[in-house]
Amino acid sequence: MLPLPFKGRRMHSNEITLIWQRLQLTPDQADLWFELAQAYATKGMHWQAGIATRHGELLEPVSGRPHAILKIGSASARGHVDETVDRAERSLLREKTSHSLASALPALRLFEADLQGQMGDAAGQFETLQQSMKAHRKLTPAMRPGAGPSLAEVQAQRLVSILGSSVALSSLYAGELDAADLASLHRSLCAALQAAVPQKIEFGNDRRMVRQLRVGLVAAHNPVVEPFLLPWLARLNHSAMQVMVYESGSAHSEALKACADRWLDTTDLDDAQLHQVVVADGVDILVDLAGHQPGNRLGLFARRVAPVQVSFLGYPHSTGMASMDWWVGDEVVSPLEHAPLFSETIAHLPRCMFAWLPERDDPLPPPRHVKAAVVFGSLNQAIHLTPRCIALWAKVLNAVPGSQLLLSASSFGEAAVQSVFKTQFAAHGVVSERIYFSGHSEPAEMAQAHGQMDIALDPTPFNGCATTLQALWMGVPVVTLKGGHAASRLGASLLHALGQAGWVTENESDYVTAAVNLARDVAALRLGRAFLRKQLAASSICDLDGYAIHFQTLLQQMWADHCAE
Image (cartoon, rainbow, N blue to C red; front, side, top):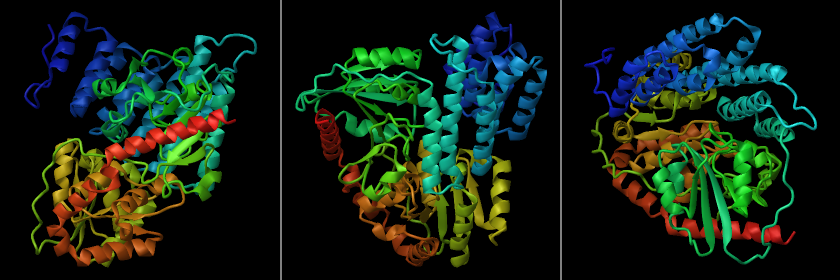
């Protein structure tokens, strides 16, 4: 019998113990080793996850498990970045045939791109993903005219879709393209996806303008989206709107079930199968909550499966998809003059595109000592911190002598990541002693990390969103730079809705000035945390009843527009 490994370092969960018990009976099952690695990674036990992954790889070549490697890779690599890259390369070299090399390469490149993101190299990630997509397209078999696609063709096209969405999402972080080029990139990525699938154009839905609408929500597990969805979803008027949730992989399944008239786990359904379900359900308006985020079902929306299709909440940019009818934002995130940047028609919620309430009752931290140095901070993941962002934050630090910077996110607990950022800040005259890192990953710990900072700096060009609201809830003011596309205007939207437009800046010089002005009044900021929390609680952002009414009214207007065509 195999002993339970890694005893003593941390308590094992019941899930880990159960998997290990199964492994004692069938230790040659690669799937169980990958399950064990996933369980360890979920618990934050990254080096254990890496060892379990290696066991699985020995039993089953990497080309046979691309999805397992993608799931486990990012978590297991956080503690062993260099080791994980070496292991991936050795796995690739073990492959013997060109076919297996071709199938292994995209997964390994996605794996490499994920590691680059954790190291804060968004530009490198963007380049790696683009190269991987180009290489895979050359190897992807063309669909045979007049014949149903084979399994290999379906899988190949699915990987093209995954790679395309990965490129799209990465482009928002990289900061290398202006707004027009970002829009063009998204359109070109989606054109290939739409060309590969059949589209439905005739629907038998009742075209009366005033009736109970059947609204479908297509959700994939996204820990960022769900806190913005669940608080108000239960407040919808179901006599006017029947809600159907098509969901895969969420930790909030029970909460979503409670909000839905019909709920379906779509994990094991491909796009063609889910297409049949949505049409059979008679959905009038199908709402996408993922965009190009991991686990998305844009292949479903490419097929045009409902009379009205809407992109909402999950992706801060136009999807680029011609079959997506509407994109829901607000006057700040998506002003009407930005219409040429959107493949969809822009629709506005009247106040802010986000509604939010904290998931936990986190207590406010005590005021920092009156003589403590000014501390700027960010709880955004490393991938948000582009070279331009670092240069801007260095200007802030240099303008406030003696000030410090706290960077707190999961990957900042890794020494290799810390070294990368210390070097980049040093190039702008900020010595490493002024920068502090925290690898907090537990929600309660992250909330209390705000007690160590006075002023939060919003990254650019991809702003924070949940991190911005968490900072404000913990009584920390936020400075943001409003950019030229939706992902770079999230902070501005939230701060305008809060009534703090003075913290929104139009250029880098004003950003530095705003941060300096707040630092001059740091004593008042430290005593005013409770006031800022009350201000947020009283704002339209936390008006969940009002938000539900506005969202429902907006969908009814979309349906009326469709019926009037």
